[in-house]
Image (cartoon, rainbow, N blue to C red; front, top):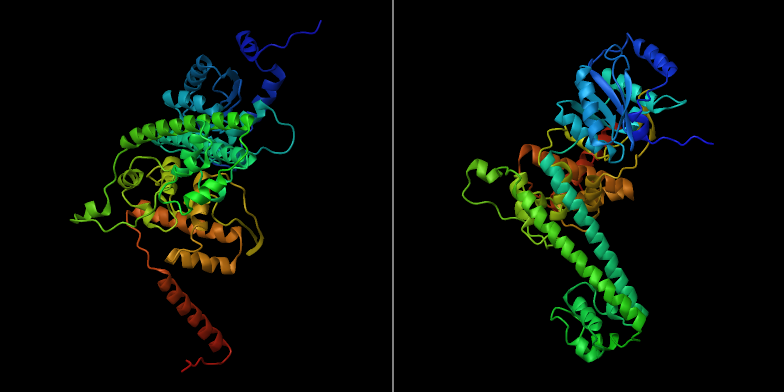
Length: 476
């Protein structure tokens, strides 16, 4: 009869430990120190995070069993922290594996331990066989010699706002999919409402859709629900509403509209929670308040987006940041909100704008050898702030501003994504300077950029002419 495989809980309750031979081999490797590397964290431990259990390694001599396995349930997490403190551990390194590390990090920080959350790309082991025991021991050694970088994490109050904001974004995406389903149902019944109304989720579109769900079929009656801002006439809308009313599609349309309304309710609840949490964030004095000016300068007006929260989000962002990021062309209030929820108002964790853009994966990555660039490699990134900066950069295509002229110049030199990335990096540098220096942004206009560009071109032509023994003469 085959032996039943024990669960992680049963195996740890029976006290089954690592095999003696594996422990002895591990002890030998741990005792073999590297004299060429300087020990930065002598009281370091490494943890290989898993879904069911965590493997923990401490330096040799701290415990008869320098590597132990602990379960992922709360009682074992407290036991893990107590064991590390008993071994004299002060700092712990672990990888950001899924969401399994969150509860572990909270337990370790409550116990007074310093936690280094590191990226798995920076802890790749040597090629060959890999096990959980080797992984935690490898993390401990790298952290002992100071070869790991701690990941950036915003403060706890910012993480709370971030969680609700990400949830709201998911609800907005789901509501958008419901609008697509509504359009599909109408087109199936040959109700061509989308051809005369640009946004079916607007006042006129949803009023007509709700009337159809409630049983109204007369095109003339439905067309009277037209809002005065719609360019199409009532007669044109009435002609577009003559369709084939199929019962099964109407049934589908009814439930899709109900789902859309429910998601709008969820978005409203998220807005209320975000407003409450943002109200508890501390204020940063604006430049006008610091200088004691009587009146602030006039702010640039931006048209509010449809999915923007109902409260004064722009005012709250200005209060928290201390500067108005929406003065920067391309940076909308929703982009500024993404910056707040993902980073917070304090960017002191990044020593320079180069470190900031490198963390965003917007800095160029060049492989240089012998003083020459042999390869330019772009790393894929899912950073939400970087994506927001890219979208802001693309919106500058037709902007009559200094940034718009700069982006068009970049597009003339490099097409496609490289130009977007370069402009996104420039916007990130501007945001970093505003948040660290506390100065407001002033747009100098597209004409100023063109004037500076002509001056640079003239200086370059004069230099080239001098190298060829020529002299430039101004045309009359």
